[in-house]
Length: 104
Image (cartoon, rainbow, N blue to C red; front, top):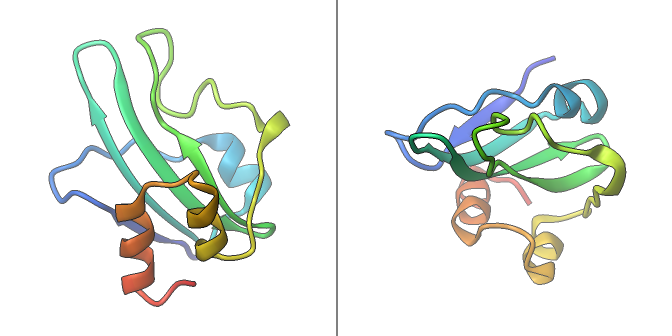
């Protein structure tokens, strides 16, 4: 399966793909930003999968890497980026990046 990947910052680090996301949600596009400090990291990922648009908080402490402690038990998806934006669950710059590439 082919997937488009957009990094908001050219010099940003690649958090990798959380295995649960790839295996269960089958994304066709992801957009993210991620920064790693000495022991922890921060970031966000927006994805579009078979159930719609969703987000993943890529923040973590030194015990885990980005997405390693992500639990699928409470995820919510939305049919459009506009609805995701209205709910306030996603980074505005990531939504704008996806919209600039034709995603709705």
